[in-house]
Length: 274
Length: 274
Image 1 (cartoon, rainbow over the protein chains, first blue to last red):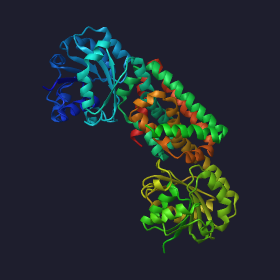
Image 2: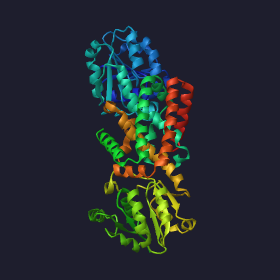
Image 3: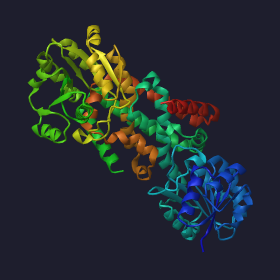
Image 4: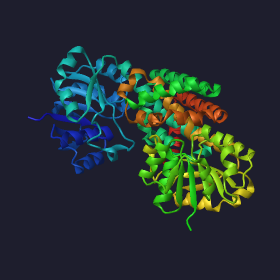
């Protein structure tokens, strides 16, 4: 029997997860959205079997996935957690984890709890960004609510693998948040900073600038959401980045050919191995 | 009669220019390279009519394009300039312009002199990076050796348009160099800085990091070449970038939702208009 997966929030990630689970026949998917219009559109797109606005539907599912923006999600956890079926699995796809894991650990729930973060996305907003292949080859971080929860999370791990992602277990949500600050939130901030500092030069920009600023086209509300729930790790990663950049600028200024070549060649090798 | 264009240096830019001029039947192209092997390979790829290692061949051309790396090019200008045919056009495709324009202005030549910079490129090295469509839709900066040279440069402008680029005249090479520092050299340095500061987190990177670091895969020698011939503009653009980034980090840290949203929305609009 296929498991029933309830997805709360049908944005780019929730919608793509629905599309991947339905398309690969891994689960019966039901969707819960704030707006009836979004539910109707998701049904029309054949992303899922049922969709509506009733949060209590989470009680029907074997797996409940909270896929709303992080700050919305934090408010939903206390309301959803008690309604989940005993033995079911409760997870989320929020892109910062410390606040969410704390919220999960504060509530009483009969469910197994595993916080999650698929490290995937594109710059299209909402259901316009749905892509059933979005998770293929991407890491999907999993953080158990308790050690017991990790053992009970086999079904979630199978679904994560089923949509093509690579489950990667972590214990510490702060470790996760520093990672995403370094490889995602700082690149976002750099994109905005480049756009802010480019002045009229932007009219002459080429591929290096386009690539480096691509993420700045993303939905502002989504970005605010992860930036403002990840302050301390972003501060730390920001300082590290400025320190690296200052070191490189110093090497350029001093004209130290040999030391600059060494730094560039090292970074190039690192990039080629990604 | 089709003009004869001599290209000195068959790397990614010189090779792509040869491919575009030949493919679109805009010119008879002859190539001059340091290594006979490169000349033979370019001939095999049918990028041009003739190729060899004799710098004196520049005397046969209506248009001479210096397409070697900037620091090599600076050494070639005094040797090439006197050999160019009277009335011919001498130009280059180097990616920084102050040192090159100064070198052009120091030499005696019977040619019309226009320094140039096609703002195009990819991360593949040498002839592996040849792409006859490389210049399509891209700006091609042109800086006259003297006001008279600008008037005489009609043939060059036609060839630039012919390969699909948009000629854009500038007077001041320093203006050019600050533009490329802002939209190209700083994105390169940010890519290296991101790779340097990412630590183990790199194993979890997604598209934002991949996009922001793509240029770091470029040939190190080419990058060294433009960084080390553009020190002052890079220093200035680097300071501007760090100041922008610090402002954004402060807004994140203060949790000022409204002011951060405003900055992000402004940058997003700017990105969408590129």
